[in-house]
Length: 151
Image (tube, rainbow, N blue to C red; front, side, top):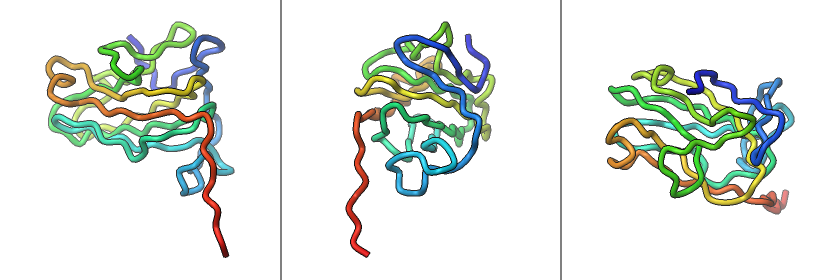
C-alpha cells in the first residue's frame, strides 16, 4: 500500500502531477491562484468526511489537506463515486493516505490532478467506517468560470 503522501506518476488514465510551489487558490475557490494548487480542507471524524469544497476544476492541481479530528485512526481514499475500497490509480500508485499517517489529531496532504470530469468521493475504508457514513461525494467540472464582478 502507498505510504507516500505525495502521489506522482508519468502517465495513466489519471494524470498525477507533483507540485513544487506552495500557495493558496486565490481565495475564491475557482482555481489556483498565482502561487499554487486549489486547496481542499478535509476533516475526518467519527463517522463523517467533510470537504471545504465539493466542486473542483479539471486539469488543475488539487491539494487535499486531511485532518483527523476523531479519536481513532482513519484513512482517506480518492475514488470514483460508488466505488468501495478502490482508490484512483496512476502509474502504479494509488490516491490514498493510510491509517498509519492519519492517527487521532494527525494531518496529511495528498496532491492529485484529475484529468477526467465526473463524480468522485473521498472515503475511509477501515472496517465499519465507510458503512457508518465516512464518505463524501464531490465533482470535477471541465470548466469553472469566474463570476462577473462590478467594481
